[in-house]
Image 1 (cartoon, helix red, strand yellow):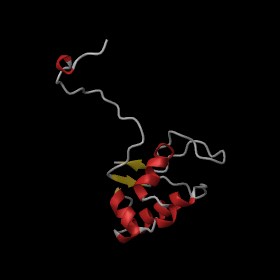
Image 2 (cartoon, one colour):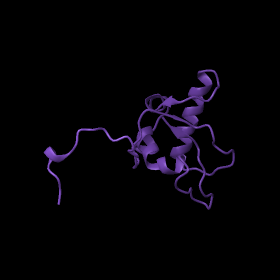
Image 3 (tube, helix red, strand yellow):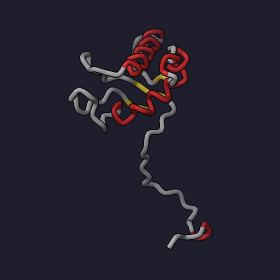
Image 4 (cartoon, helix red, strand yellow):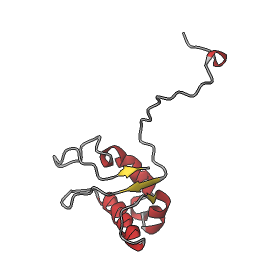
Length: 111
């Protein structure tokens, strides 16, 4: 039986676990192997990340998704950087295998 809204406690849970494919904030691609095979739109996102990092001194750092989106031209894919990253989020985080029998490879992390 479902509880009514009045019966639900107003205490914030401390053990919540976020799931799903939401993307926001920033990303850092600090563990991309040199020989990985990636879809073209992912290479566009990663190249934009590295261009921005080079402009900021060359040290790996979280880059806002908005900055990546503004840096590269995603019109050919009818998607922006957020859509592309949302689609590949689980693979980027190493939770889902990449194609071509590459297995689980973590490319970076969201923050």
